[in-house]
Image (cartoon, rainbow, N blue to C red; front, side, top):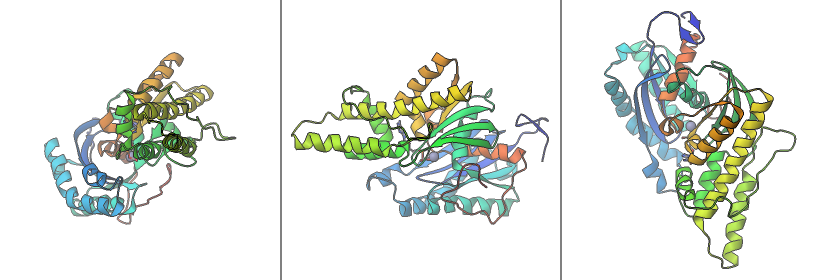
Length: 350
Ligand code: KG4
Ligand code: ZN
């Protein structure tokens, strides 16, 4: 292991990671230099296939990963203009996610590591989402607060140091992205729901319908979105029974505002209590335009520096895994060939 200062190597040696991500419905590979410089970022999305079924079908996701992963990795190396001999390690998401989907990436990474002799580094998917913020912000260093909002997770986290996290709050039921997907389906926008609600909401009035902003008793930073989802379904059923016309853009905008209000409120409450100076957002829902602008305004008002990855680095990708793997690499973390997929891996666990 090399010496390090603030997570950066003290000498000039460049560390290149070949990173692989296959935890859900994107097959992705990337080459990342020193955790921050992306040399390639190849993402093969399965959205077209899963759209036919209205959501991700795990068995189909695993099969599609198997069909695509070799080409995706070859393309990532080609676009970086490199071969495996230019790499220093292989990083791969090993959890959380769909077990069959994760296994494809993990088996592939183990095979590459075995054949090439490159060290293997198992990466936590949520840690990857957080690290996406390092890629375009060379000045960003821990400590900072991060709101991780994805299809499977809603976490408010203090990033105390590289690889060191304190979870302040998490969702008690549905994840924010899951609520977007379910509401989108209920109003007939289909899959994937988040981007469709985001787009449709632009034509609607966010104050047209008042949906609840849930608080979890006794825990200021936990989230609950299932009540909001039920309130939207009740509203839709009530309107149908009364023969009233449903204005989908108004429902989308009002629902989105309810989610964004809660996310911003919780993040700002934590920022106040923990004297946060830097706040980042991460995960698929972090690409939501209303959340990005509301969080930016709230941070500006309080003198907090706001960070958010470009939308392509918010949704699942392997560049973020390459960034997280680098910070593991310089801390001497290595995985053995017994690395396995862990579908419900908790943040901070190994
Ligand atoms: O991080 P991600 O790509 O995968 C997981 O790790 O879960 O997040 C996917 C989630 C989906 O629920 C999707 O609907 C949501 O992120 N999403 C959005 C937007 N783009 C993706 N939600 C709201 N607005 C968006 N623009
Ligand atoms: Zn994700």
